[in-house]
Image: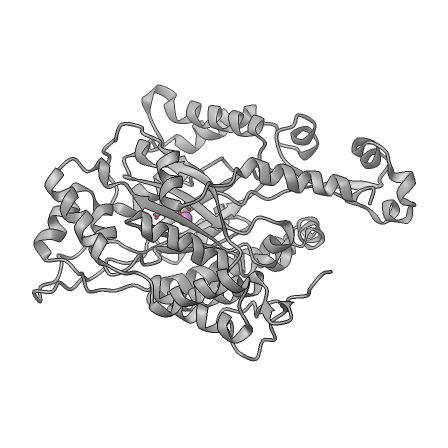
Amino acid sequence: MQWMTPRPHPGENGGFPCRAARPAMTADRFVSTDHIRSLFSQAMSHMYRTEVPLYGTLVELVGEVNAGVLDAQPELAAQMQRSGERERLDVERHGAIRVGTAQELSTLRRLFAVMGMQPVGYYDLSVAGVPVHSTAFRPVDGESLNRNPFRVFTSLLRLELIEDEALRAQAAGILSRRTIFTPGVLQLIEQCERDGGLSGEDAWRFVVEALETFRWHNEATVSLQTYHALHAAHRLVADVVSFRGPHINHLTPRTLDIDAAQAAMQARGLAAKAVIEGPPRRACPILLRQTSFKALEELVHFPSGEDNAAGTHTARFGEIEQRGLALTPKGRALYDALLAQARDNGGAGSTGGDYMQRLQAAFAGFPDDHATLRREGLGYYRYVLTDAGRALPAAERGLPAEVLIERGLAVAEPIVYEDFLPVSAAGIFQSNLGGEEQRAYAARANREAFEQALGATVADEFAIYERLQAESLAQLVA
Ligand code: OOG
Ligand code: NI
């Protein structure tokens, strides 16, 4: 049985969750998790727009660029329409937060589960000098992704990487005394776990209560002196430990042309990062390309009545991204090798003025047409019958997918990458923490410790894409 969920209002201004929207019920008394996630992502977008006005500018600009691309490329527009991706584009966002304790992380897991978001992937950022490890909470099945792919990159601070023992103990003490969730949201999470869902009324209350955890607080909970000590250990430590909650630090819209969007940002005086993280511009976009800019220098008030010095705290920033084909392990290995080649070239890293040229040159080794990408098993595809294919009885479609495609009975469409890239994330962290700071921690990925804190294992992203592809193949003969 399939239940219809009315799509949320796509417009940002009128998009605040409204009681008039009739939620779909998954059982007699519950709304769908997709519906709750849509309400929440709209509410988050609304809140962030008032907190960081430049975010509104960014959303507008991305909307204009996307409309231009869809006008200029009717084939892309048609493909996105067919795959169900066109509608999600306008509401598609990812956010990011950083928490301090296992307790906070595991409660977040339960909170996101209410909205149908699961932890996918493990990201070790310590290699890049950021003392956190992370996962992405997101929906995993095809239909939910098309309804609203809202994702939150969630990082856990690794206090064990702070060298100063006294400071480490002090930070742990501060974190253990704070509560980042409202009593109301905790009660609704428990209720949802116990009953198996939330009613429309309760979903609404849940969204309002959950939002409180992600709100910015410009009052530090620690003294200016403690803030300085934390800041000296790492800017990120100060950002996680000094406040009442894990403020959402960016909310990223998806653009169909990041080069055009970056140029438009610069034309409007938004100082976008010079380098676009990820792969170079290509005919067939792969994985994820991202760029960011500093949105705000935060004025922070301390309990003693003092404020921080101008420019010292940068909690919130802006980011845009372009998403492309999800790669198989083979494709990903090739991507990683070519990226390393471009960055390692003469030890120049990703900062040299010619980086974009080096990147282009390195990626000449990555096929750039879908037929080859698919044949060589570099990316994941969704197989769909054409009208001619659907006209045939199922029994006559039992041919290899290649043959169906050759005969015009089926097409293969790229499956979009829904995850993140650790090297890119490191670049985004670094630029937003204030640039030059580069302290390499010894690479110490510790997935077991992360999963223990989370209270669950993280899903394997490849297995999810593999399943989506396999399901589409099964549909060809269904
Ligand atoms: C998260 C940075 C990572 C991305 O898009 O790769 C990220 C953070 O700064 O907390 O959001
Ligand atoms: Ni991001």
